[in-house]
Image 1 (cartoon, helix red, strand yellow):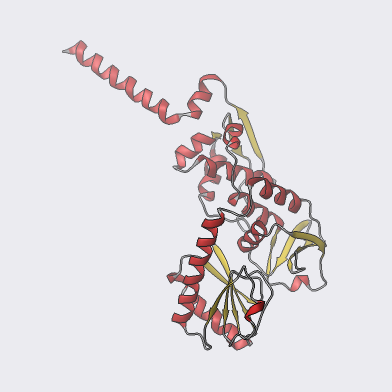
Image 2: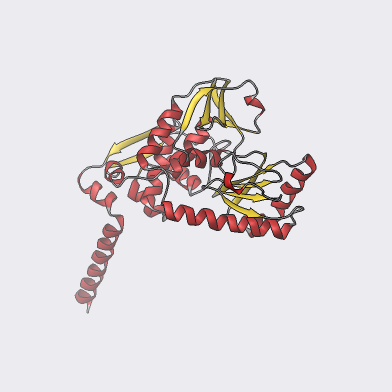
Length: 313
């Protein structure tokens, strides 16, 4: 999981110090943490002065709090002292990971399958000059067109923006501000759509809809921009080499069928060429249960061996 750490009220020198400390503790924490600079849109916010806005799960107050009545009910507060040493930051980051994991387990996901599908449909319709805002009018991302391709400028890396959109059900589409291209992260819109599809929940009906066909991928995904984790490279190689059914690919790569379907849906969403052929008769039974068919073949060979032994004894 990729998470964002932000600061509020820090000098350029102090921001650089936090960035360096975050690199040092990287191997000692469970999640991938990225520093987004001065922002209130972060999972973990280090604040040197009062801040009552943003969407942070945890806020570390590096000042003496006065008005606790203004605290957000959605935010967990930790009081600490500045300067914050490496071990202090490590402890805070590990506490934040536990809080976020506990919240995720309690909520069991904030976006349903239908909501994610509706979000992807809404994003696909966006054009250059559009921008994505949260309900409190905080700019999440702005879109521009460059060389006939739609790009996103955002404060957040692509995986973190995907998480923010899935968790925030109240987003608004508006016009981009003039300085939107000054935001630190830039990537094509398809990178965000790809990430959302790979993380989407699948309804049980999806397997039955996809399992009666074999699929082949007509082109290699553009991994300059598209995420490569979660067996994506192995799936790309398998489906560009030869047509496979969902179950065949899952058995070949030793992964869940749902991961195969999510990959194929992501390819379709970003416009990659996929061809499919319907599986009929005995081929369908073989594709649907390759382990069972393999077991029958082994049983047949065993039976033949026994018959041969009896014949020559």
